[in-house]
Image (tube, rainbow, N blue to C red):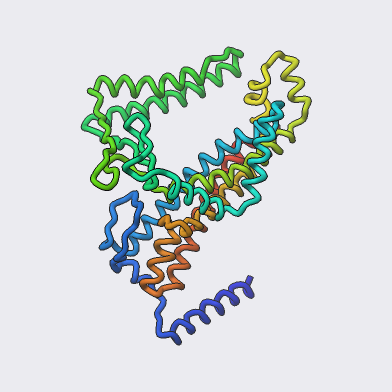
Length: 365
């Protein structure tokens, strides 16, 4: 351990001496200076006169957004593809097999460039945008959707939703206890869904429907209004999701195959349908095999988002690790920030997945 600390002390001291020889100082004061560059996607207020620290925060949020959306879509796709891969339908199984083999054997960067190129070059111009019900527009500038505008009184609906979620959790726990004590089964899913949707909806209607939608409209040169999703974000999101879902599908398939066939046969002997056997018997047991490698795929997806710079998506690498670095010449400081941010993302994901893995682990008496 002493040798390890001595090695790091030597490396840090050597870096400081080299910076001094080049006439540079080691400080993070540049974070308070004006960034002087624009960012094409901002989830918080930002202008070119904002500080580098603000630009860094925008990059962090953009990275978190694409990682979160990618994990959700990749998980859903992966589970669906993994189950279809084991289907008795020969054609469906082979189509999924070809998709998985093609997707996971092509570098993710090529997927990103391919999907981005299709969006930019094959989708129509804004004036000929593909319209879905005059509410959703798809063009080579991105996807435009209606933007919700919340009026006074909408807070009651949010409060009702929170109360409904708590009530559903309490009911679910109570129903589980009743089932364990008496064997009586309540339709928990239907009742919880009805409460979570019904209560906020009733409050929303009683409070006068305090919600309007800003619809996107065609301006002089481009669509205006509504919510816009850039083609860079869409390409990165879809490419990362497709690529990661191919690996998750194989993890799901191997997890299901790890369950003894006797489980299928025992459930079938009780007259349970195959899809219910999969849902109630197989998947809960397979999760113990699926979760550990699934965490690695989530980490890979988050780290692969750093390839966003190839298509101009302004994530943490493009902002603080790209333009800010070029403007300030603080290569050591900016790279330390980028490294620590990705390390933080990875540690948070690992901590959550370890907690979930421990929660579903088999408890032996």
